Length: 406
Image (cartoon, rainbow, N blue to C red; front, side, top):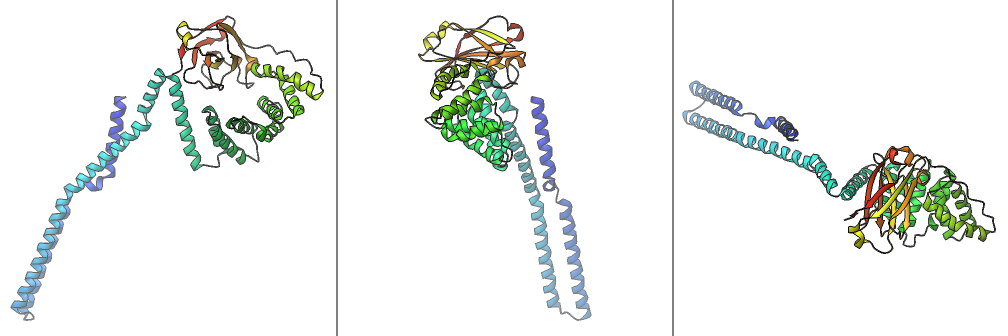
Protein backbone atom coordinates (compact mmCIF):
# COMPACT_ATOMS: atom_id res chain seq x y z
CA UNK A 1 0.00 0.00 0.00
CA UNK A 2 2.82 2.44 0.92
CA UNK A 3 4.68 1.67 -2.33
CA UNK A 4 1.49 2.30 -4.32
CA UNK A 5 1.01 5.67 -2.62
CA UNK A 6 4.61 6.69 -3.41
CA UNK A 7 4.28 5.65 -7.05
CA UNK A 8 0.97 7.50 -7.45
CA UNK A 9 2.45 10.63 -5.85
CA UNK A 10 5.50 10.51 -8.17
CA UNK A 11 3.27 10.16 -11.21
CA UNK A 12 1.14 13.13 -10.08
CA UNK A 13 4.24 15.34 -9.53
CA UNK A 14 5.78 14.33 -12.87
CA UNK A 15 2.54 15.12 -14.67
CA UNK A 16 2.34 18.48 -12.92
CA UNK A 17 5.92 19.38 -13.85
CA UNK A 18 5.30 18.46 -17.48
CA UNK A 19 2.07 20.44 -17.74
CA UNK A 20 3.57 23.57 -16.13
CA UNK A 21 6.96 23.43 -17.88
CA UNK A 22 6.41 26.78 -19.74
CA UNK A 23 6.18 28.52 -16.36
CA UNK A 24 9.53 27.12 -15.23
CA UNK A 25 11.52 28.55 -18.19
CA UNK A 26 14.19 31.05 -17.17
CA UNK A 27 13.83 34.60 -18.55
CA UNK A 28 17.55 35.53 -18.27
CA UNK A 29 18.56 34.83 -21.89
CA UNK A 30 15.57 36.66 -23.34
CA UNK A 31 16.18 39.63 -21.03
CA UNK A 32 19.85 39.94 -22.08
CA UNK A 33 18.95 39.75 -25.77
CA UNK A 34 16.42 42.53 -25.31
CA UNK A 35 18.92 44.75 -23.48
CA UNK A 36 21.54 44.30 -26.23
CA UNK A 37 18.99 45.11 -28.92
CA UNK A 38 17.94 48.29 -27.08
CA UNK A 39 21.58 49.46 -26.72
CA UNK A 40 22.26 48.85 -30.43
CA UNK A 41 19.12 50.76 -31.36
CA UNK A 42 20.18 53.66 -29.12
CA UNK A 43 23.72 53.80 -30.54
CA UNK A 44 22.35 53.66 -34.08
CA UNK A 45 19.95 56.51 -33.38
CA UNK A 46 22.69 58.68 -31.85
CA UNK A 47 24.91 58.05 -34.88
CA UNK A 48 22.09 59.18 -37.19
CA UNK A 49 21.64 62.38 -35.17
CA UNK A 50 25.39 63.11 -35.28
CA UNK A 51 25.41 62.56 -39.05
CA UNK A 52 22.56 65.04 -39.50
CA UNK A 53 24.42 67.63 -37.40
CA UNK A 54 27.57 67.14 -39.47
CA UNK A 55 25.62 67.50 -42.72
CA UNK A 56 24.08 70.74 -41.47
CA UNK A 57 20.49 69.45 -41.64
CA UNK A 58 20.03 69.54 -37.83
CA UNK A 59 20.98 72.28 -35.36
CA UNK A 60 22.76 71.50 -32.09
CA UNK A 61 19.75 72.23 -29.83
CA UNK A 62 17.38 69.94 -31.77
CA UNK A 63 20.06 67.27 -31.92
CA UNK A 64 20.47 67.28 -28.14
CA UNK A 65 16.70 67.04 -27.66
CA UNK A 66 16.58 63.95 -29.94
CA UNK A 67 19.53 62.37 -28.05
CA UNK A 68 17.66 62.90 -24.74
CA UNK A 69 14.49 61.27 -26.14
CA UNK A 70 16.50 58.25 -27.33
CA UNK A 71 18.16 57.94 -23.93
CA UNK A 72 14.77 58.10 -22.18
CA UNK A 73 13.44 55.28 -24.37
CA UNK A 74 16.52 53.19 -23.54
CA UNK A 75 15.91 53.65 -19.81
CA UNK A 76 12.20 52.71 -20.19
CA UNK A 77 13.11 49.55 -22.09
CA UNK A 78 15.69 48.62 -19.48
CA UNK A 79 13.12 48.99 -16.70
CA UNK A 80 10.63 46.79 -18.59
CA UNK A 81 13.29 44.10 -19.05
CA UNK A 82 14.09 44.22 -15.33
CA UNK A 83 10.40 43.72 -14.46
CA UNK A 84 10.24 40.72 -16.80
CA UNK A 85 13.25 39.23 -15.04
CA UNK A 86 11.68 39.81 -11.65
CA UNK A 87 8.44 38.05 -12.74
CA UNK A 88 10.26 34.74 -13.36
CA UNK A 89 10.26 33.76 -9.64
CA UNK A 90 6.55 34.54 -9.49
CA UNK A 91 5.94 32.25 -12.48
CA UNK A 92 7.95 29.50 -10.83
CA UNK A 93 5.94 29.99 -7.65
CA UNK A 94 2.73 29.70 -9.66
CA UNK A 95 4.02 26.52 -11.32
CA UNK A 96 4.89 25.03 -7.93
CA UNK A 97 1.43 25.90 -6.61
CA UNK A 98 -0.20 24.21 -9.62
CA UNK A 99 1.88 21.05 -9.13
CA UNK A 100 0.90 20.90 -5.45
CA UNK A 101 -2.75 21.51 -6.33
CA UNK A 102 -2.70 18.70 -8.89
CA UNK A 103 -1.16 16.35 -6.33
CA UNK A 104 -3.74 17.36 -3.73
CA UNK A 105 -6.63 16.78 -6.16
CA UNK A 106 -5.20 13.39 -7.14
CA UNK A 107 -4.86 12.45 -3.48
CA UNK A 108 -8.40 13.61 -2.76
CA UNK A 109 -9.76 11.54 -5.65
CA UNK A 110 -7.82 8.52 -4.42
CA UNK A 111 -9.20 9.06 -0.93
CA UNK A 112 -12.80 9.39 -2.10
CA UNK A 113 -12.86 6.71 -4.79
CA UNK A 114 -9.84 4.49 -4.27
CA UNK A 115 -8.55 1.92 -1.89
CA UNK A 116 -9.26 3.89 1.28
CA UNK A 117 -12.98 3.62 0.60
CA UNK A 118 -12.57 -0.07 -0.21
CA UNK A 119 -10.63 -0.65 3.00
CA UNK A 120 -13.28 1.21 5.01
CA UNK A 121 -15.99 -0.96 3.44
CA UNK A 122 -14.05 -4.13 4.27
CA UNK A 123 -13.63 -3.00 7.87
CA UNK A 124 -17.35 -2.20 8.07
CA UNK A 125 -18.20 -5.64 6.67
CA UNK A 126 -16.13 -7.25 9.41
CA UNK A 127 -18.03 -5.31 12.08
CA UNK A 128 -21.49 -5.21 10.54
CA UNK A 129 -22.03 -7.26 7.34
CA UNK A 130 -25.58 -6.02 6.81
CA UNK A 131 -24.56 -2.36 7.07
CA UNK A 132 -21.75 -2.98 4.58
CA UNK A 133 -24.17 -4.70 2.21
CA UNK A 134 -26.58 -1.78 2.55
CA UNK A 135 -23.78 0.71 1.84
CA UNK A 136 -22.74 -1.22 -1.26
CA UNK A 137 -26.33 -1.33 -2.52
CA UNK A 138 -26.79 2.40 -1.89
CA UNK A 139 -23.54 3.12 -3.73
CA UNK A 140 -24.51 0.99 -6.72
CA UNK A 141 -27.99 2.54 -6.83
CA UNK A 142 -26.46 6.03 -6.80
CA UNK A 143 -24.11 5.15 -9.67
CA UNK A 144 -26.97 3.65 -11.67
CA UNK A 145 -29.13 6.73 -11.10
CA UNK A 146 -26.34 9.00 -12.33
CA UNK A 147 -25.72 6.81 -15.38
CA UNK A 148 -29.40 6.84 -16.36
CA UNK A 149 -29.44 10.64 -16.28
CA UNK A 150 -26.98 10.60 -19.18
CA UNK A 151 -28.53 7.54 -20.86
CA UNK A 152 -32.30 7.77 -20.18
CA UNK A 153 -33.19 5.35 -23.02
CA UNK A 154 -31.47 2.34 -21.43
CA UNK A 155 -34.37 -0.03 -20.73
CA UNK A 156 -32.13 -2.65 -19.11
CA UNK A 157 -30.70 0.02 -16.82
CA UNK A 158 -34.16 1.12 -15.67
CA UNK A 159 -35.08 -2.50 -14.94
CA UNK A 160 -31.90 -2.94 -12.88
CA UNK A 161 -32.73 0.25 -10.98
CA UNK A 162 -36.27 -0.97 -10.35
CA UNK A 163 -34.93 -4.26 -8.98
CA UNK A 164 -32.60 -2.35 -6.66
CA UNK A 165 -35.46 -0.17 -5.44
CA UNK A 166 -37.49 -3.30 -4.67
CA UNK A 167 -34.62 -4.64 -2.56
CA UNK A 168 -34.57 -1.31 -0.70
CA UNK A 169 -38.39 -1.47 -0.34
CA UNK A 170 -38.75 1.81 -2.25
CA UNK A 171 -41.86 0.53 -3.99
CA UNK A 172 -43.09 3.76 -5.61
CA UNK A 173 -39.66 4.38 -7.10
CA UNK A 174 -39.50 0.75 -8.25
CA UNK A 175 -42.86 1.05 -9.98
CA UNK A 176 -41.75 4.18 -11.83
CA UNK A 177 -38.42 2.62 -12.87
CA UNK A 178 -40.07 -0.55 -14.20
CA UNK A 179 -42.75 1.50 -15.96
CA UNK A 180 -39.96 3.39 -17.73
CA UNK A 181 -38.30 0.10 -18.70
CA UNK A 182 -41.58 -1.28 -20.05
CA UNK A 183 -42.28 1.92 -22.00
CA UNK A 184 -38.86 1.63 -23.66
CA UNK A 185 -39.38 -2.05 -24.56
CA UNK A 186 -42.84 -1.93 -26.15
CA UNK A 187 -41.52 -3.63 -29.28
CA UNK A 188 -40.03 -6.49 -27.24
CA UNK A 189 -41.86 -6.59 -23.89
CA UNK A 190 -40.30 -8.53 -21.02
CA UNK A 191 -42.61 -10.66 -18.84
CA UNK A 192 -40.41 -10.23 -15.75
CA UNK A 193 -40.46 -6.43 -16.03
CA UNK A 194 -44.24 -6.37 -16.44
CA UNK A 195 -44.70 -8.57 -13.37
CA UNK A 196 -42.26 -6.51 -11.31
CA UNK A 197 -43.97 -3.26 -12.32
CA UNK A 198 -47.36 -4.59 -11.28
CA UNK A 199 -46.08 -6.02 -7.99
CA UNK A 200 -44.31 -2.74 -7.15
CA UNK A 201 -47.51 -0.80 -7.87
CA UNK A 202 -49.44 -3.04 -5.51
CA UNK A 203 -46.85 -2.83 -2.72
CA UNK A 204 -46.70 0.95 -3.06
CA UNK A 205 -50.44 1.07 -2.40
CA UNK A 206 -51.32 1.18 1.35
CA UNK A 207 -54.14 -1.32 0.71
CA UNK A 208 -51.90 -3.55 -1.44
CA UNK A 209 -54.47 -3.19 -4.20
CA UNK A 210 -53.35 -5.11 -7.30
CA UNK A 211 -56.43 -4.47 -9.41
CA UNK A 212 -54.98 -1.51 -11.36
CA UNK A 213 -51.95 -3.68 -12.26
CA UNK A 214 -54.04 -6.62 -13.47
CA UNK A 215 -53.45 -5.88 -17.21
CA UNK A 216 -49.69 -6.09 -16.62
CA UNK A 217 -49.98 -9.61 -15.17
CA UNK A 218 -52.26 -10.74 -18.00
CA UNK A 219 -49.81 -9.36 -20.57
CA UNK A 220 -46.97 -11.22 -18.85
CA UNK A 221 -48.95 -14.47 -19.02
CA UNK A 222 -49.48 -13.92 -22.75
CA UNK A 223 -45.70 -13.79 -23.10
CA UNK A 224 -44.96 -16.59 -20.59
CA UNK A 225 -48.04 -18.71 -19.75
CA UNK A 226 -46.17 -20.82 -17.19
CA UNK A 227 -44.65 -17.99 -15.19
CA UNK A 228 -45.21 -18.75 -11.49
CA UNK A 229 -45.12 -15.13 -10.33
CA UNK A 230 -47.47 -13.97 -13.09
CA UNK A 231 -49.99 -16.71 -12.25
CA UNK A 232 -49.85 -15.86 -8.55
CA UNK A 233 -50.28 -12.11 -8.96
CA UNK A 234 -52.89 -12.47 -11.72
CA UNK A 235 -54.94 -14.77 -9.48
CA UNK A 236 -54.61 -12.42 -6.51
CA UNK A 237 -55.62 -9.38 -8.60
CA UNK A 238 -58.63 -11.31 -9.95
CA UNK A 239 -59.62 -12.31 -6.42
CA UNK A 240 -59.48 -8.64 -5.31
CA UNK A 241 -61.69 -7.79 -8.29
CA UNK A 242 -64.25 -10.47 -7.28
CA UNK A 243 -63.49 -12.45 -10.45
CA UNK A 244 -63.51 -15.88 -8.85
CA UNK A 245 -63.44 -17.77 -12.17
CA UNK A 246 -60.22 -16.06 -13.32
CA UNK A 247 -58.60 -16.46 -9.89
CA UNK A 248 -59.50 -20.17 -9.86
CA UNK A 249 -58.12 -20.73 -13.37
CA UNK A 250 -54.82 -18.97 -12.65
CA UNK A 251 -54.24 -20.63 -9.31
CA UNK A 252 -55.23 -24.11 -10.48
CA UNK A 253 -52.58 -23.85 -13.19
CA UNK A 254 -50.12 -22.52 -10.63
CA UNK A 255 -50.71 -25.54 -8.38
CA UNK A 256 -49.81 -27.86 -11.26
CA UNK A 257 -46.36 -26.20 -11.49
CA UNK A 258 -45.33 -27.25 -7.94
CA UNK A 259 -44.90 -23.73 -6.53
CA UNK A 260 -42.88 -22.92 -3.38
CA UNK A 261 -44.29 -24.36 -0.19
CA UNK A 262 -45.67 -21.08 1.19
CA UNK A 263 -47.64 -20.46 -2.02
CA UNK A 264 -48.76 -24.08 -2.17
CA UNK A 265 -50.21 -23.78 1.34
CA UNK A 266 -52.25 -20.72 0.31
CA UNK A 267 -53.49 -22.47 -2.83
CA UNK A 268 -54.56 -25.52 -0.82
CA UNK A 269 -56.60 -23.19 1.37
CA UNK A 270 -58.14 -21.02 -1.36
CA UNK A 271 -58.78 -23.37 -4.28
CA UNK A 272 -61.55 -25.49 -2.65
CA UNK A 273 -63.55 -22.36 -1.84
CA UNK A 274 -63.02 -20.93 -5.34
CA UNK A 275 -64.02 -24.24 -6.93
CA UNK A 276 -67.23 -24.28 -4.89
CA UNK A 277 -67.94 -20.63 -5.72
CA UNK A 278 -67.57 -21.23 -9.46
CA UNK A 279 -69.43 -24.57 -9.41
CA UNK A 280 -66.43 -26.63 -10.45
CA UNK A 281 -64.85 -29.82 -9.11
CA UNK A 282 -61.33 -29.38 -7.81
CA UNK A 283 -59.08 -32.07 -9.33
CA UNK A 284 -56.69 -34.02 -7.07
CA UNK A 285 -53.41 -32.35 -6.23
CA UNK A 286 -50.53 -33.66 -8.38
CA UNK A 287 -47.83 -35.67 -6.64
CA UNK A 288 -44.79 -33.63 -5.67
CA UNK A 289 -41.72 -34.18 -7.78
CA UNK A 290 -38.82 -35.75 -5.93
CA UNK A 291 -36.29 -33.24 -4.70
CA UNK A 292 -32.70 -33.35 -5.91
CA UNK A 293 -31.25 -31.96 -2.66
CA UNK A 294 -32.85 -31.78 0.75
CA UNK A 295 -31.59 -29.98 3.86
CA UNK A 296 -33.11 -30.75 7.25
CA UNK A 297 -32.45 -27.80 9.54
CA UNK A 298 -32.95 -28.06 13.31
CA UNK A 299 -33.48 -24.48 14.55
CA UNK A 300 -33.21 -23.34 18.14
CA UNK A 301 -32.89 -20.00 19.92
CA UNK A 302 -29.88 -19.21 22.08
CA UNK A 303 -30.76 -18.82 25.75
CA UNK A 304 -29.17 -15.34 25.84
CA UNK A 305 -31.75 -14.08 23.31
CA UNK A 306 -34.92 -15.53 24.77
CA UNK A 307 -35.73 -12.22 26.45
CA UNK A 308 -35.63 -10.55 23.01
CA UNK A 309 -38.26 -12.86 21.51
CA UNK A 310 -41.44 -10.90 20.75
CA UNK A 311 -44.96 -12.30 20.32
CA UNK A 312 -46.07 -12.68 16.72
CA UNK A 313 -42.60 -13.02 15.25
CA UNK A 314 -42.24 -15.00 12.02
CA UNK A 315 -39.49 -17.54 11.46
CA UNK A 316 -37.81 -17.43 8.07
CA UNK A 317 -35.38 -20.23 7.18
CA UNK A 318 -33.61 -19.83 3.84
CA UNK A 319 -30.53 -21.04 2.01
CA UNK A 320 -28.30 -19.01 -0.32
CA UNK A 321 -25.39 -20.13 -2.46
CA UNK A 322 -22.13 -19.61 -0.58
CA UNK A 323 -20.51 -18.21 -3.74
CA UNK A 324 -23.33 -17.16 -5.99
CA UNK A 325 -26.23 -14.76 -6.46
CA UNK A 326 -27.74 -13.15 -3.35
CA UNK A 327 -31.28 -14.42 -3.93
CA UNK A 328 -32.49 -17.34 -1.76
CA UNK A 329 -32.55 -20.80 -3.32
CA UNK A 330 -35.17 -22.19 -0.90
CA UNK A 331 -37.31 -20.51 1.75
CA UNK A 332 -39.59 -21.64 4.55
CA UNK A 333 -41.76 -19.16 6.46
CA UNK A 334 -43.46 -20.16 9.75
CA UNK A 335 -45.72 -17.80 11.70
CA UNK A 336 -45.43 -17.73 15.53
CA UNK A 337 -43.05 -20.72 15.68
CA UNK A 338 -42.48 -22.87 18.74
CA UNK A 339 -38.72 -23.31 19.00
CA UNK A 340 -36.88 -25.59 18.73
CA UNK A 341 -38.26 -27.08 15.51
CA UNK A 342 -37.08 -28.76 12.30
CA UNK A 343 -37.49 -27.29 8.82
CA UNK A 344 -36.87 -28.93 5.45
CA UNK A 345 -35.43 -27.03 2.48
CA UNK A 346 -35.43 -28.62 -0.97
CA UNK A 347 -35.58 -27.91 -4.71
CA UNK A 348 -39.38 -27.69 -4.74
CA UNK A 349 -39.09 -24.31 -2.97
CA UNK A 350 -36.97 -22.71 -5.73
CA UNK A 351 -38.35 -19.47 -7.18
CA UNK A 352 -36.61 -20.08 -10.52
CA UNK A 353 -35.78 -23.42 -12.23
CA UNK A 354 -32.08 -22.59 -12.54
CA UNK A 355 -31.80 -21.20 -9.02
CA UNK A 356 -32.26 -24.19 -6.74
CA UNK A 357 -30.26 -26.00 -4.08
CA UNK A 358 -29.08 -28.79 -6.36
CA UNK A 359 -27.45 -26.26 -8.71
CA UNK A 360 -24.77 -25.50 -6.11
CA UNK A 361 -22.34 -27.44 -3.94
CA UNK A 362 -22.19 -25.20 -0.85
CA UNK A 363 -24.77 -22.99 0.86
CA UNK A 364 -25.24 -20.65 3.79
CA UNK A 365 -28.42 -21.45 5.72
CA UNK A 366 -29.95 -18.63 7.77
CA UNK A 367 -32.78 -18.64 10.30
CA UNK A 368 -34.33 -15.29 11.18
CA UNK A 369 -37.04 -14.33 13.64
CA UNK A 370 -38.56 -11.13 12.30
CA UNK A 371 -41.43 -8.81 13.14
CA UNK A 372 -41.69 -7.59 9.54
CA UNK A 373 -43.51 -8.97 6.54
CA UNK A 374 -40.71 -8.55 3.98
CA UNK A 375 -37.52 -10.46 3.26
CA UNK A 376 -35.19 -7.71 4.43
CA UNK A 377 -33.78 -7.93 7.94
CA UNK A 378 -35.03 -5.27 10.37
CA UNK A 379 -33.37 -3.78 13.41
CA UNK A 380 -34.15 -5.99 16.39
CA UNK A 381 -34.60 -9.19 14.36
CA UNK A 382 -32.92 -12.31 15.70
CA UNK A 383 -30.93 -14.53 13.38
CA UNK A 384 -28.21 -17.11 13.01
CA UNK A 385 -26.38 -18.69 10.06
CA UNK A 386 -24.53 -21.89 9.32
CA UNK A 387 -22.57 -23.03 6.26
CA UNK A 388 -23.51 -26.35 4.68
CA UNK A 389 -22.22 -28.55 1.89
CA UNK A 390 -23.73 -31.24 -0.30
CA UNK A 391 -22.05 -33.86 1.89
CA UNK A 392 -24.13 -32.66 4.85
CA UNK A 393 -27.44 -32.78 2.98
CA UNK A 394 -28.32 -36.21 4.38
CA UNK A 395 -27.86 -35.25 8.05
CA UNK A 396 -29.76 -32.76 10.25
CA UNK A 397 -28.10 -29.37 10.38
CA UNK A 398 -27.98 -27.70 13.81
CA UNK A 399 -28.62 -23.95 13.46
CA UNK A 400 -28.65 -21.62 16.48
CA UNK A 401 -30.21 -18.15 16.37
CA UNK A 402 -27.53 -16.38 18.34
CA UNK A 403 -27.38 -12.70 17.34
CA UNK A 404 -29.62 -9.64 17.12
CA UNK A 405 -29.71 -7.38 14.07
CA UNK A 406 -28.44 -3.94 15.16
